Length: 188
Image 1 (cartoon, helix red, strand yellow):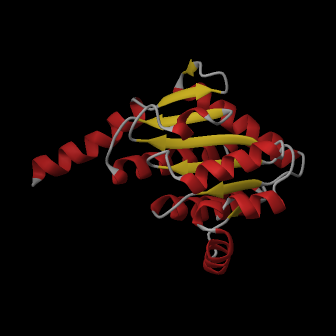
Image 2 (tube, rainbow, N blue to C red; image 1 turned 90 degrees about the vertical axis):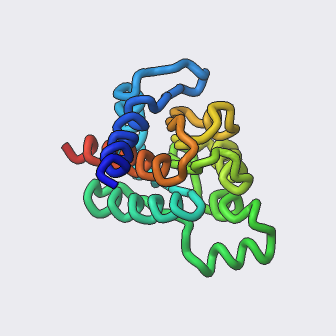
């Protein structure tokens, strides 16, 4: 048991250290530069009165809800996660689950807002549709994904964080760590 625990904890260090970050043109950039660029996007949006939107499914939705509160509460930046059960079930019922983020983003997101799109697999159709809707409105996108390095989400954002692991817990915790690192850097 001790060996499992020790190896498991070490895996999170490996996941963070092996996270690949790319910019909009697909160029690989150092992790620290990706975090700095994300901080600049979010601070710029916040300073201009824009909003940060966060979307994700399951565990990623929990990260989004948590971070939305932290961005406005501790950093004073308007932030919102689309994870309200009434919204999710209404949009799913009326338009289908593939549009559960697309429809509210089309209504709310504006030019120079920032969307943080989190998907462990990077293949969730509703997340991909949400990113496209945000970009159509002129918003900036930060993507966080994992599993396969050729997943569609891993190249859609202005800044893309890819965690090269196939275990949900490892990918999700690394995404949460990246989000908190961005927030804590803003609050430094």
